[in-house]
Image (cartoon, rainbow over all chains, first blue to last red; front, side, top):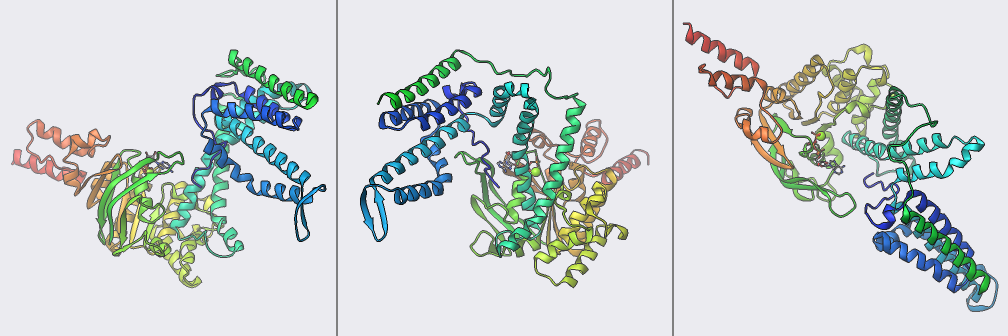
Length: 265
Length: 284
Ligand SMILES: Nc1ncnc2c1ncn2[C@@H]1O[C@H](COP(=O)(O)OP(=O)(O)OP(=O)(O)O)[C@@H](O)[C@H]1O
Ligand SMILES: [Mg+2]
């Protein structure tokens, strides 16, 4: 259970780290949209330029970002195989009944580039922003939805509490697993069913403890007169400063650039 | 029986630099010994205990149980854990079965004993921790905190360990509950020759029960001596955020005021006897 990388935050004090979390969420969205706008080499070059500069500014080790890709390796392989073999067109290579077409290669390369950029871009956001900052930013960005009666504050509060609790529960699970191992529990051998059953002595105490903690937290919040979102102020309100506006300008430029490559070229 | 040779341990937190929790710790545990383990918070006591039963692997050094390295490939850790019983801090948080009795059977079942043997051991263990019979078939979640803790300890005792390791077993108990647990450990030591390793933040308890005290300071083993010797280093202990038992301070003060008493006294009965003796010498 060691090293539960939640949100995989990579501590730092780079320009990207210090941007307002709302900017980072919006930028990530803009980046993803641009990825699907572009369709030619200059277009991809623009998005690549954006990603590379963001990564360079963030000072997050590239190796880490690449390691993050391992999670979607299977997806990448599947996408590649299907696109390679199943796209009709001008055959460039064939063995037995399998054929690789020129169009297939192009589609595959495009898909892979998009996928890799997409994952790298969004993980750059989670690497440079703490989960709680992301939750705050989401609350702020979703504020307009209040008009249509979406309980924005409550949702964000739930997300923040859940985020706060995951590492605590992970630690607790670690202790319970160790305690049951001390009672000679065996989690690593036997059939799948046997292993699943072996988890009961971990899950029951974990649930009990989660409920106990939730109850304690509820009592503590009540004791401090917590009562939902209206008129609540923040200890650290999110405020934009000059660099945030500049970042928005870069986002706009990115989107515009991508649209231009699509329209003109 | 259990030996540590130059054991070091670093928690790996993924980002390269880990937390050095233990640094070159060596000591051994003999049968029937009562060892007190003290140290400031974060000094590495819990880490040390987890190493003893192979829940963590030493980064350097080795741990031998009956002469065999417990870190070697293919070593039967299950067997080790049935012989070195470990009671975690707040052990009541690991109870999970429908009834107290079933929960205590969990350990023995895991070592592959017959159902009958498991039940026999569970019954015996529950009796030895002094849980009243009418509690045996209720849900462990209905018991009081102190009772739950006794059930959890019974769960370990049912495996009949030769060494019993307890991490702050009295935390959060009332004075009566606390004494019951400590007396139980003392009884186990005397009647069954079980070695006890007790982690405690209460100097009075270790002074009273332990035959030997290990003092941890920032991951290093500072002292490994008898209680009287350890508590004679009052100034050093205070520098480590520890102290001597209150009664030691009283005896030292008396001595400073010219009363003819020894200043290496660490338990209350001993102090009482010493003061009476001094009084009799003064007023024959
Ligand atoms: N799971 C863990 N991951 C990383 N570091 C840890 C972990 N557990 C403990 N540590 C660190 O190892 C050191 C020793 O911790 P340990 O829990 O062994 O201390 P302790 O003596 O038991 O303290 P206490 O008296 O508070 O129980 C501390 O610096 C602690 O921060
Ligand atoms: Mg501890």
